Image 1 (tube, rainbow, N blue to C red):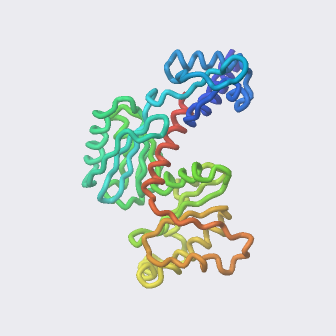
Image 2: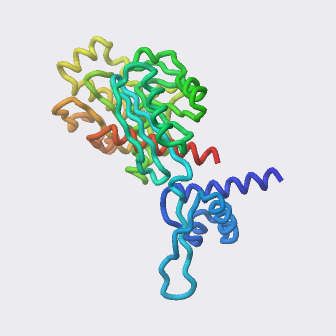
Image 3: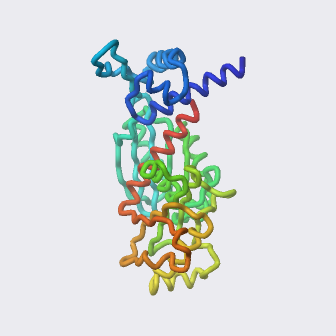
Length: 316
């Protein structure tokens, strides 16, 4: 009996993955995509429509025979909350299940109370979200913050604090890891990618997508390139002022040689980056494609939704 129940749950997860992509589906297409029988598909759609998780939205066009029914996820079945926390600023967003933003607000960040006030405002606006995904510049292990640009949060288990106060599920990760998740949407056929932040204020930070999944390492320290031994902290600060390209070149060469990604996306506020020189000395066949990022905040917002949807599906 336990095996049968687990099989039913697995089949339902397969159906939900299709619907939670936001597409319109008919039963035949669901059967082709999941490998399940039409009878199984029909039974599961009945369960999902009875819960109003999925809606019947009309009939597909057909010149002959019976018209197939079309179904789509109910965008308001559940909502996903997101927070982007930076030194000096905080952004709150709420998504429906189509990935549409139904709430977005920016505030200045002054203390941990700012975070709680933002969540309170989000909850007052919308009670349908019971999952909150958070991105911030830090190493985060089980909700505990370290190596953060926001010094007062170092050592704080923010996940536990927020879950206890607001009775919602909280997921936290670094900004660069959350941004890296956006690459899954932009490059659906690519398996190994790197998202790189290179700014005047911080050491180089990277998020790694390996086999289309975030790689954190054993202690969520993966991607903190500022600790590589090529240059001391003092030397890095000098280079950032005098020759930032040399610093970026060393970091990206390290990533190329260690990870061997197909694509590296780079966000930087440094002017006149000469990316043509980055991989000089490395055989051409091993050069990844480099893509410049114009708006990392948009990538973070995409990543927060992708992670939230992934957590919802895993919990069902």
